[in-house]
Every structure is written in C-alpha cells, then in structure tokens.
Length: 188
Image (tube, rainbow, N blue to C red; front, side):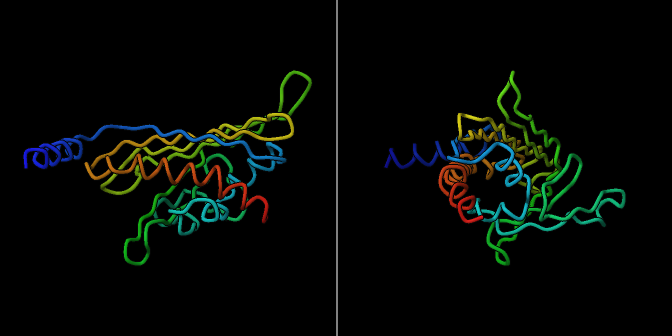
C-alpha cells in the first residue's frame, strides 16, 4: 500500500510540474542526396507518410491573418510560409499546429564543404492549451553517398499533461526518421 501511495505521489508530482523539453533523433538515409532529403522533408504533404501521429496537412487559414501568404502544401515551404498540421485522432480528438517555416537553407557541395542544409519550423501558439513555442529543426549533412539527418524538437508545455509528451514524441520521431522516412523515400 505504501508503495502504491509513493508511486501515485511521484506521478502527481511529475504531472504538476511544467518544464520545457528538447527531443533529438538521428538517422542516416542510404543512397539519397542532401537536396533530395531536404526537398522531401520541406514538403508538408510528405509528413503524414513518415510521422504516425500526423493525420494530414492543409494550407494555413488565411482568415487568421489576412497578410499571411497562402501556400501550396505539396511543394517545399519557403521561409515565412505556413502550414497547418492535423494530428491526433480526428474527428474524435482533432489536434492541430500551425507551423511557420523559419529557415530552408540548402548548402551546395563544393571543394571546401559537403552538401547539407537546415530546415526549421516554429509555432508560437503550438497546441492550444497544451504547449507553445514549439520548434522542429532538421540538420542535414552528407556522409559519403548517404545523408545524415538530425531532428531536434523543442516544446514549452503550458499544461502538466504535456509532460507525457517527451516519451511519445521520442518514439514517434525515432520511428519516423529510422523506419518510415527511408520507406517513404523508397516509394517516392
């Protein structure tokens, strides 16, 4: 009985604290160039094929900000363009985050450096009532004939329930980069 009480107190303590967190995942994609990988990752319609929690994407709602640029989601996003990612279990649990492309920089290979790039998305609003200041960043680099991708996700929880997210996101992101991304690229 004492063990159960301690366990419940420990869980309650963890859930009552709200602390920002960072999650990293890394993978090497065989036989693909840095440019191919960056183009694939920068194209929102590809996200549901590599992320289990991603249900779909759509153009960001222009009604939210009349000055916001509307963009197609079936091509690589450019800096400043936005996309709405739908995840969860729609229609029962429809969750969405509107991402803004902060950076989509391709480094072309030359005699001094191998090819690579950086792709970064940010959402100040994050997931309403759960998390804010969410970012996902991809660092892409050549490793011989292969390409290495490092993904970093940072989230500021605003609700204790978000403390459950790190483990789920780590598994989801590792599965995305190590299993589903290579499979999606093979089928593309």
